[in-house]
Image (tube, rainbow, N blue to C red; front, side, top):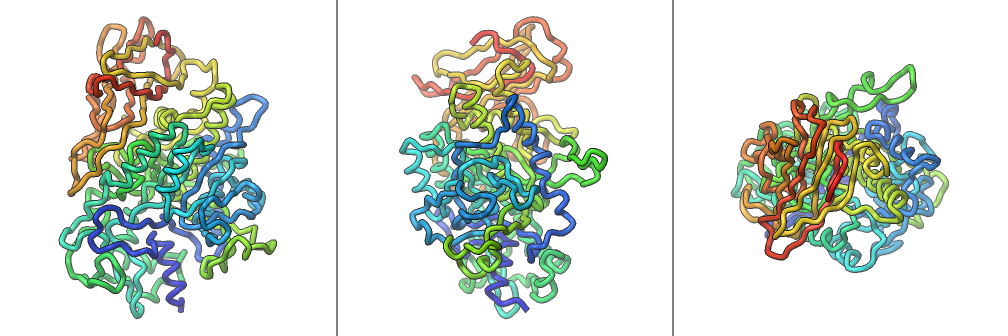
Length: 603
């Protein structure tokens, strides 16, 4: 039978729970946890090894790397900071000489499997396993523990930092969770207020959210990528976990040996303290899981929040005759059963995009170090630097996006005379080119704008492309901005505008619909005959409804897709209006504009 220590470790991997306990009634944000669902208790690769390298193909990474003739993009000289639950293993054969421990604890910071897997997904070379190659295999990694993330990020943002991207595959503990074991009984912990049947912190724009936005505002060329969370997992539902665990092949050593049945008893906030029988809803209570993104970085405005995409059926995405993966299709765009869904409480679209998050193969620390803490100096044997493991979770999806943004930064420097990519440009490019679900127009609160397509995002940066553009535009409070466009290229015309907003005031209460948007800019596209086309909007009170067109007063990113019946209007001038009429007097906002199917004639 598993020891209590080993069981706690396994449960932390399943349930995404930090050993730091939340206070029963947190005044603001609760402690962080890693969002890890580790497959295969042992590190032997099973049936899904054959799809382990899928993300690079499904999201167009291979094609993105080859966009510049005579060069392979690799993220060289791009710094990606990784805040996580411990140190990245710096001497791993896939990461060697490119990892720098920047945390104040230095070499004494214990190695962390989750951190190392995240770093490998971003920047692993695939030296030991080709299928474990990361998105940007020459990028540099700066490793930090997440314990003091905000202070460390603020210090970097206040300096001339070389950090171009940061990855945050962790989040607040909200709703139901568990690493509490008592005599073979797994006790549930409710992280919200015990007198409420819902945890109000799901979807909330909290103090940490505002601080993430403030940091992004002070560092415009630093793109912050955050995982959406795994709160929809049936393993985080007291009423369903008992049915799920005995069926878990990956955790056969746990199945049947520990009782997961929920008898109504649970602890409020801390294991062993405040036993309660109060009734609380499951994390996915709302129409299958809406409003399940924990507050914190994931609900900030100026970050890219990433959900996890379900693996398409292997037979549909892999060509046996060619030995390669086929392009991702719209019918394959959907989330895993654990990926958290939006909206943010104020109605903003979250997640922003999704990326592969199931059975991702990447670097791992020595197995002994997962149960007994090790430092960098404890992992020096040849076998210690060659570990790999498969994990699932939005923790694995976020580093895919971080790696893509690292490649886009390298591409920006090549194509724009050394110019770094702005964070609003990165966000606009990924949303502009995202692949939405089959039969769905516009965004949803489950997949956001859809699955990222790295190669198409990169094309926006290539000079001379046919009807594709990415750049910046200034919007003033006193003078509407008008851009003249003309139809060009074969793509269905689409326009995206994103901007870095000022941090808003932290929200309180349950599902507070007051907008956290400070600088509200409205975008309208007029056809050559003057007909207006408005951006997509969603209704947070009806989260499963399809997007409609209208005025968006919630999001600091807006996208307009020209309806199919108007795409034939190739002659004449189209006018894009960016209205800052609701900005404070004298305010000037510089944002990022991405265009498909048009050329920019006059700005």
